[in-house]
Image (cartoon, rainbow, N blue to C red; front, side, top):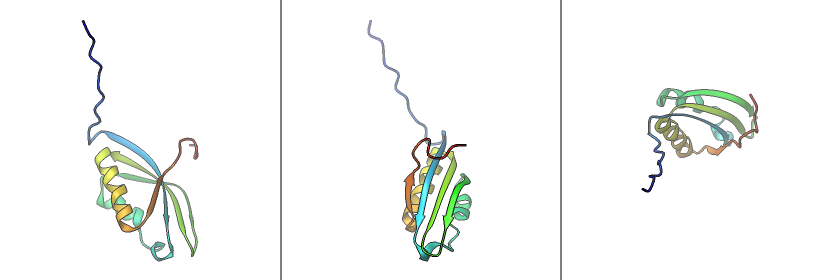
Length: 94
């Protein structure tokens, strides 16, 4: 008798945590992207690290929430013109 392999299915509303680097140019530095993400989507935002100057904004942002909301939040940021990159595991401890 052959055994069936269990397939893992990820549900759209399963909890997810994702750490991202957000980088944006001077024209976006005063725009409250993180506040907007927290209000437009059902996610909790946590700023892990940030450096904002007159030339560039770089923020390490952690998003917690349902998978579909985190994905939608990331897509919205990209659509706004923010460069979004995943944080490699172990880059920021704690």
